[in-house]
Amino acid sequence: MHSRFSPLFALFAAGLLAARSLALAAPATAPSVPDRVLRDHWYIISVGTIPYGYYNDRVELRKGRLFYQNHVWKREEGFLVEEQLGAYAENTAALKPLFFNFHSTYRATELTIDGTVSPSGRDLVVKARKGDRTLPVVKRGLYSKAFFSVFFPYWLGKKAPLLKPGQRESFVAIVEDQPEQALTLMDGRVKADPKEAGKFHVSYRGLNSFWWLDAEGIPEKIEMPQQRMHVRRVSENEAKQFLENP
Image (cartoon, rainbow, N blue to C red; front, side, top):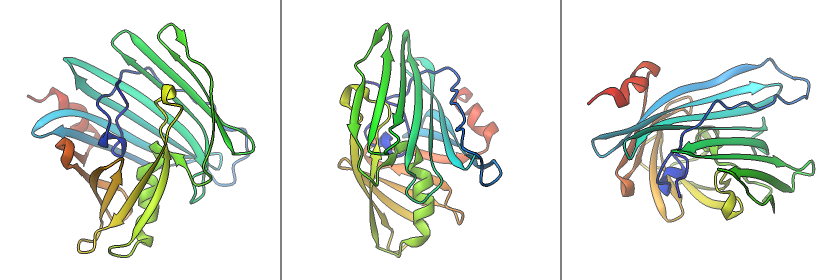
């Protein structure tokens, strides 16, 4: 099973998939504040000393709601593949999920997933298609504090200033790209490093990663020791040239 890459879920993910452009309909709610881009950052991914891939994280305020798009490119089994995941959430500290769209292609197999939270906010309904098969519709209840996993870097950036050295915080994330596993809800923990400001330990499914954030809460570097994976923030130009370098 090839799963998407995000710094959080690369703790257990094995691959990234190819995708076409993502298009999510803008919410109809009248905006309370002007639309604007909140984040637009590029990262490169290495396994040991080997270039593995790169990605772009973009967060926008659209009609009073948050839109997060994660676009990834990586080299896998000799192929350059890519994928996109986009999601809307309420512009609150809880990041209450609204809906998401995921599209990927691994070689000749396409996977498209559309998930929408019910008006009550209690259920997530997901429709998916894999290759020429329409998968059964999945409906599951939501934990009130759960948020879409793609929002984790944004959540951590907002939470970081509130954590004292050594303090822990738990979270629950919705895994968007696994419809056959009924959209698993995963528990995780974050701990502010007791000695180094801006460094955070993330524990998820028995695996660990280390995040370094800048003064604005933007990830600068991520280390995943068990996978020998390293993520580093770079310019757009450097990211796009990363897999072209020997």
